Length: 306
Image (tube, rainbow, N blue to C red; front, side):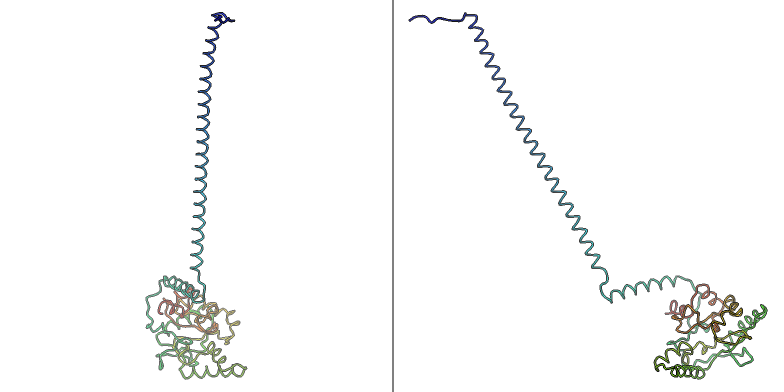
């Protein structure tokens, strides 16, 4: 068989074989590098997917938390709305509670150590009569025939003398009244309102603000006295309040145990119209307390004795 001719020398063949071997090794390395890059790409893709999933979970948790907060706030508002009074009886309960708090605050005032049974604390007012047959022991305090409870006479004369020393002129125009006398005054007042066209009920209600029924008048206690200036014997409130005798009594009557029984700003409390001439004996300590705290005798009873 003829021998095949070689176009390459042995050295060239050897170099080509070495080159081929190197090429094969390089391809192996390249293939390995490609496989590693593929692995790395897959790993990165998996990491990104995991991170995305984690953020989705966090977002869902945040949304659930916000919804829970909204529901909680809504429930609180619903509960508060349900607790608000929705009818008249509940509103009255709130008002009653406020009144009780006010009464507690008032009783925090430390008043004189007195009892409702003390003779100078007796109360006669519209709807609150004295015991039937009530008849105090009295003494004359004016030559015109007006009387006052004998236990209050000394302080009255001291007040009258102090006013005289101040250059003032006090005149008594009414004092203790019997039950019969008071009832006749009340009925006369009722008749006057009837003549003015009021109904019987209206006339009686209006009369009570001026001349009360028997045993419901302060004059029945024997502790009340009507005082005006000697030179101006009138029961015109607008006139009386402008005179120096009235101003002096407002400033000094409590020093002698007397108070203005029916003040202008307390008509709804006393149930009687403003009477700047009507002064009532309650004792020096009580008079000072009531005057300093702007309280009527009625308010003291309501606060401390009810």
